[in-house]
Figure 1 (cartoon, rainbow, N blue to C red):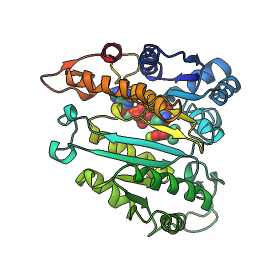
Figure 2: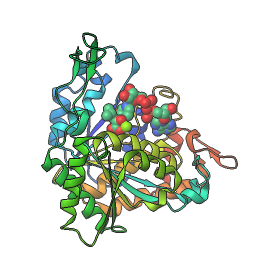
Figure 3: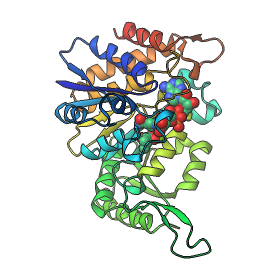
Length: 356
Ligand SMILES: NC(=O)C1=CN([C@@H]2O[C@H](COP(=O)(O)OP(=O)(O)OC[C@H]3O[C@@H](n4cnc5c(N)ncnc54)[C@H](O)[C@@H]3O)[C@@H](O)[C@H]2O)C=CC1
Ligand SMILES: CC(C)CC(=O)C(=O)O
Ligand SMILES: [Mg+2]
């Protein structure tokens, strides 16, 4: 089985190295091949998603991705900016279903900025549609404003759109996932204001007719943001569009203690997938050896479970993560008094040792 390793920028290489170390210790005969992506792809090959990298991702059985983005490339034309690499991979590989499980490990109840009683026992699954919405809609750009009080000035514009089939397939993913959990889906939209999301609501309601054993609730995104910090445990599965899912999953990350704890799987229709932490390249801490590698290591576990058919190896990794947390080891983002502060590499080594 071939795994493409795309470390990317910022903390990407540091955290990916820890996950690779763990994968290599499993005793499996995986073939791991690395390639440049993001700013690293641009620097080495003049493009954030070089042809060779895309070809490797397509040929591999699964992709393990670090993160992309570096402020020094923010002035480049958009097509060459590092973020286009991850957007391009999602589009090119048809990775429309992004699963972001927000689970609170009991040992981290005090690491969350929310009261322990609000978050303890938290286990929610955010399902974010990943290849549509305003992130991909066209037309977009900067043009002359055609009317209104600012007519004649420049205006920026993007297009929010969702095709019926795009909504149907992500709704099916959500209802099917709910069947393996508490059988409750909250569809998050902005149907009170946006045509796109009234349409979203209508289609999700229609798909729900096939899943009468699952409870469906609709919620506006502003309320959902509030409920996520008020009473997050009331959610089971949240399904939403690309932009709302991007924002809500970062908020949900803090329920788990840190964004450094939130893994993700981005799947196509056949469960081929790309696995990455939910966070970005964290340029503010890059190179300091302090980034939390657990979201990436847990993403590797999701890869074993969803794309490589190695559920028992996924369990081994997840149990090892529980063990190191129980041992009191913490990177600075989840550190509390009375625990032991460790760096990125030490955390990776500890997981390796705890594999059993
Ligand atoms: N999938 C991807 O590759 C993504 C890339 N980005 C890019 O990353 C760059 C930085 O974006 P930001 O908005 O700062 O978001 P970010 O997620 O990189 O960082 C936000 C904050 O969380 C902290 N953080 C993130 N991951 C951490 C970890 N593993 N351990 C400890 N702390 C961690 C960072 O230090 C920072 O203070 C930008 O260029 C952005 O476009 C952002 C999100 C996703
Ligand atoms: C480049 C961004 C769309 C990446 C991001 O923020 C995410 O996937 O969570
Ligand atoms: Mg994001």
